[in-house]
Image (tube, rainbow, N blue to C red; front, side, top):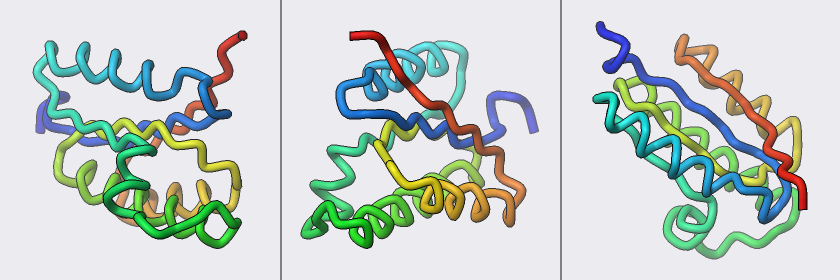
Length: 117
């Protein structure tokens, strides 16, 4: 499998308006020009379509992160570079996503985005 066929999840976490989505779409464009298959799982779009009806309680946030993590791992395991700009404020939720990736030996990188105001 070539480098362009190897999937991975890059999870961009941080506060609202930190630049996660902007960075994800910029990186996606660069990766595509290099021949990589790339998907961006934007947190706002996921909440509208995949997690519609969920609120912002701790439990609902965990469910949302678990859903996004499942889709990300599925895509990454099939050769897609998956960029995930999602707030995901709870470490245990992100750890569950990381563990899911580790179980399938799918590369996972978590990046905390904190841009200055």
